[in-house]
Image 1 (cartoon, rainbow, N blue to C red):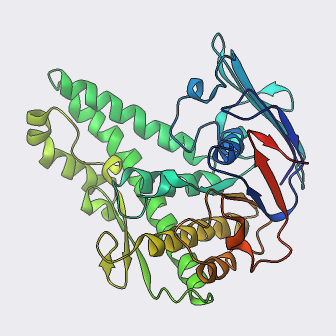
Image 2 (cartoon, rainbow, N blue to C red):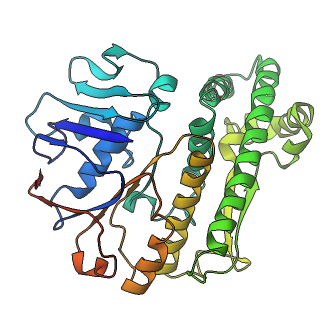
Length: 353
């Protein structure tokens, strides 16, 4: 849990120091006030990356030469976490004043987020859904970072060989198949756990959404049989890969299909229904981290968008016991049914006291 947060020269935010409360809280303000920037700063501090997909330099306040984010976390492992960027030094992560690797950084303050950038998460391209699975893996098993890096290195080497003459491809296929088998097994387990958590949440809620199914689709489809079968599939695809000069099989092409009431979401769900499903999936991701002893910070940007008061009150029940949550809104009246929810006003990049 974050007990103190400080920010300087980030996006359109003025320099601030804030002590977020435990449990859920709401930050309200007009469009352009800096609400999304505030959540982005918290997310970047916890993960080292922006949920908008922005490069570090793009997060710097106009005219500034760098930015600085810092938080003091409580709980069993009290720590001071900091992220800074400068044009000369790039991005730097620090834990208790000392440079730190990514795995140790990520272990300090787990986070799950939903933002406008996730609008197509459920029914858009598969990349964001793969990242969702991997974020859950790393959150509960930081060592998965090494496996992901190992797979990416082998994949990059295979891409280089295919772009050239393809010599040495067989050896790298063996390395890639071994890493792929491990990664697919972990993703399959994570998808199953996430599906069970989501079903449990929806079953006990008043949302009335019905059945939502998460279906993990590995590449290649024979991946359930292990590295030997994956390697054989790579061999069968070899001629076509050489022709197209790119890898056609492997976990970089996995997908996590989301089916609602037995159908895909693109044509069967409205914007409001997709928002409800996305928030429910965010709650399920957080519940898994809580169950593993790593309670996350929840960040919900424009949490009430596309939702009426009744639906907002129903979905909020999924988060009312969150250890710490920051939601944003530009429609404070939509939250009228949630009496007692702590609120802060953000105006012109300044957080009111």
